[in-house]
Amino acid sequence: MGRNLQNSERLRPVDLARGHGLSTQAVRNYEEAGILPAAGRTPHGYRTYTPLHARALRAFLALVPGHGHPTATSIMRAVNEGAVDGAFRLIDESHAQLLEDRRTLQAVERALRDLEPTTTARPDTAPGPGPGPDGTCIGPLAEKLGIRPATLRKWERAGLVRPRRDPLTGYRVYDDSDVRDARLAHQLRRGGYLLEQIAPLLAQVRAAGGLEPLEAALGDWRGRLSARGRAMLAGAAELEAYLRERG
Image 1 (cartoon, rainbow, N blue to C red):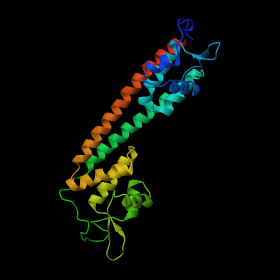
Image 2: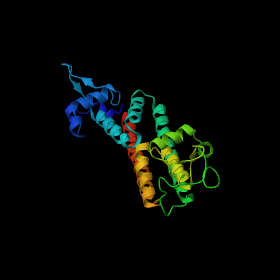
Image 3: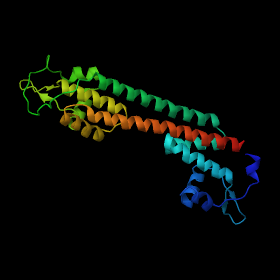
């Protein structure tokens, strides 16, 4: 522990709490979770903290936006237990996940560029030919996307894809717009979107007869990834300051 903080003033739980808009119970909970170093005790058993604890609290709160509460907790616990390399590994894993999310976004953007926008919406009851040049069955489409047919059936129940049925065989038939929707759903699922988030987006794409609504979603997604990256930088700065003070 840094010498300048060993002999510094004592802080009460309320002193730490007020500076960050927290309750004193939250401060105690953070200590019990290992996010803060163990507090000192007065002769009467009351907790006392130091500026080092305040630095630890700032580091934790700065780590949360970029890494999430569970990972930030694990990082601080590792540091306070002296397992700094373990903390660095957790940080590396978060950065690797961010990179993977960026790659997924790029994959969605590539898929978007590859998709031909439709100019008119396909009526739900429009008749059409069976599987062939104008349509594909569930098995080949699932294989093309690298998913199971059961996944496509689940997406159909959620409203993500709307294949028609061949009048002779009863098989599902996916036309070009269905394939487009399935590809977009697949990419958005990889990007972390929930089915209930994807369904209204694809409904807008169909209603608009194009992909403009998806452009806005991708812009929002890109912005969230950038914000996460900046938050990781801010968290790293506060953690480094805490590590220096610990000595």
